[in-house]
Image (cartoon, rainbow, N blue to C red; front, side):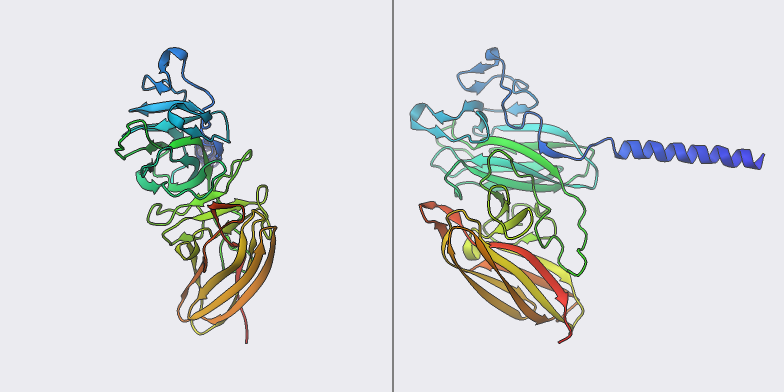
Length: 371
């Protein structure tokens, strides 16, 4: 009888574990465009007047509010020109307009949204991004790339199984039709970080980062912490006034692996990480700098900080790729040590002075030393 009861309870436990496993795995790993994230599925002809979408649910897979336009790339009435390199169509948000979509996620997991956002008028424009109770106001009056619009990342931690992602234009412009242009929107689930053996820095090679569009990329701008509390670059803090740029090896030259960071805002772009250390113990910080083979030229300099030590590393770039490695020995002064990197100068492309760029940072490592 006792044996039968044990078997009975084992079956119940097994069934519960199976149910839990199925429930926890019911939401797939996300890494790609949201449903109709490139806006290639347009409204029915009866639900659009010229370019203005009529009806809350007329844009497939999206819910809209306010003046939302469905536009095509190329010359526009009034002398405008819309560059839409990731497809043929985009959505433009007028005054107080928004688009939103509900996404199934895993509670407690971190997600990053990658989206192309470009201003369309001369006035200052702001794009407010919201998800899972968090929001950030993205100032997009500064253009970092002139060959097809900028791409941004916004990260959030899922507090619910179903999260509403909202893109909203909170500004009031002189022209009610002005507003940011959304070209493509993707989402990626961030995998948990783990230490690499022999390295105290997490994600030191920047291999874990936001989704990168495959067909066209100008890099992904990572918002400063004041605009995005959860970092879209796991392990790292964007602790500056200007964003840093996440670049991939398919569209740029990176020193090693699949990705790296481009410091595009001079002293206004800084990334940092706080690592565990033992007070009075000696450590060595090593890192690689170079250029992304994107026409960024000039005398580059990256400054690195660790505990009380500072290192300035110069790199002469002709914009055709290349890199060098540097190292710094420091003594820990507490059980936490902040590593910080920024570019000492401002840079633009050699043939395009409106395109901001900078030195590339990769392969950041810290390990203990005896002497």
